[in-house]
Length: 86
Figure 1 (cartoon, rainbow, N blue to C red):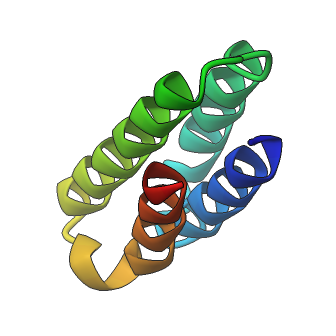
Figure 2 (spheres, rainbow, N blue to C red):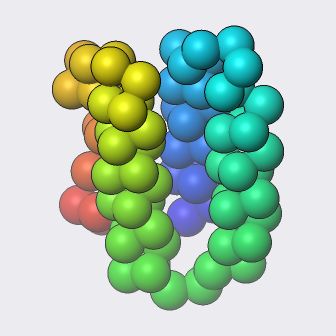
């Protein structure tokens, strides 16, 4: 369970690197705070829902900066879908 969360966090940070330099610190801090707040999550269904939310939010942020979210966030989507299928 924690492994999926760590993989998702890693992918989110990779996506943050695609953002403009002035936006990176804000979104890196935002991602870290959100993952830290939910690190003690116990129910698998809750984790799957949070991973789907992380993907949806990441796609929105990428599209906000005119970055193709379908191409850029593919690995994050794979991590989130794997967790939801388990």
